[in-house]
Amino acid sequence: MIDNNKYFEVLSNIKNTLITTRNRVILSTNKELIKMYYNIGLILLENNNWGTSFIDNLAKDLKVEFPTLKGMSARNLRYMQKFAKEFSDDEFLQHHVAKLPWTSITTIMDRVNNSEQRNWYIKEAIDNDWSRPIIIHQIESKLYERQALLENKTNNFDKTLVSPHKEQVKELLKDPYIFDFITDKGSLKEVELEKELINNITKLLLEFGNGFAFVGREYHLEIDDEDYYLDLLFYNLKVKCYVVVELKTTDFKPEYAGKLNFYLSAVDEYIKSDDDNPTFGILLCKNKKKITAELALKDINKPIGVSEYKILSEIPEFLENKLPSIEDIEKRLNNLEE
View (tube, rainbow, N blue to C red):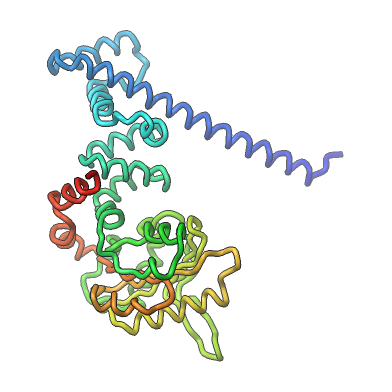
């Protein structure tokens, strides 16, 4: 007679083996495809002095020779040529680029011209398992400029965290956060902002980034017979810690940092386990008042980052006026290379 518990254990093991093997096969197949496209691109590069009709003729002849083979259109052949030209680092190609689907690679090539930025988006796409639509969204929302490039992030992480946790948390902070799914043009109250964010929790988690898991809204803590409510509580699986997010629909005020500092102490005391890293906080304000925020954080003993947020009606003006210019970005990248 079959032991049901044992049977389902065997079934589960076989399913896990099939899934793992299938994923490895898919990844291996994709790598070989990307390598093939790259090698074809190298051939095209070596013979790129025959005019524009050269690739058109190749595409027609390849269609005759391989009528069922997809991916050999003139357009795709030109992508292969561009691919081989712009990704000459074999190590980066093998360990990063080849892990992405071809459509993701061509999307990044089309939309990002700077190689430093392009490589950053490739790594992020792999680490976060971004689909093509998400890649497009992150590029259009200037994620590189908001997360990787800007130097004016306001936080006290250097004083309150140790490596490597410090560097990991720094990488998570953005400024500003883009809530393009909130369309309200009026003055949102904090409770209304919270409600909008939770109603769009999938998009919110995408904006917060890799590893964020939602724990609760208005998360209740009782301390000395007093009730306290954290606006938003998350756990980040990547850095293994709780994250308290406080929302303010006004400009930053020093007392906001003190209150969040108290909340972080409470989470560390009553919720955090011994295996978790220290909890950190994010204060999201309409205007972070950089100098005021820096002074307020100076003697705070818990890790806090202060950032702004933008809703849909504010984004066009922000993208046009607030981000670094192309010249600023190029200057920064040139300084890094020297």
